[in-house]
Image (cartoon, rainbow, N blue to C red; front, side, top):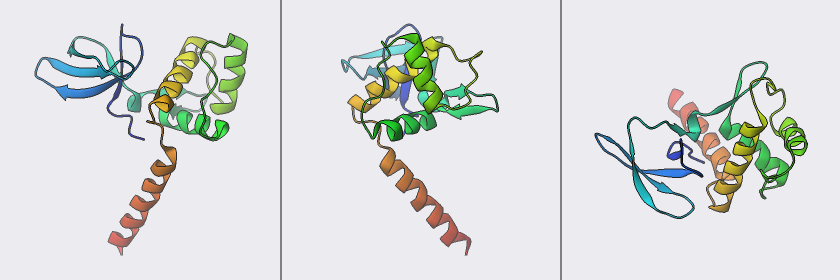
Length: 146
């Protein structure tokens, strides 16, 4: 699962995919309605690959949170972001053990759950191949070191 080209754009709902890069900004495409539009360099854009959840001992990358949801749900959709705050908090305690509840708000948890379900709906959560690719990469590195 490559999250480097999946973006969250401030002021725009949902997730977007990076299509092209220009000198004045980028062009993104919405995952939901496939509409393309330019984003200026002044707009706050975050790659999902760069997002992490605060824990009491450090940070957990968003990709790891998605992996935990995927394993917990057996590859199915996670808890809806529209559930009660208590249900979301309890669910998040299972998928992100030790998260810092003073720095991670329920609104952040809802966003993570919504993103996971969006990515799963579009077939962009493929953790089985991701783990296999990491194993193959390590095997190749071991061979080249010998």
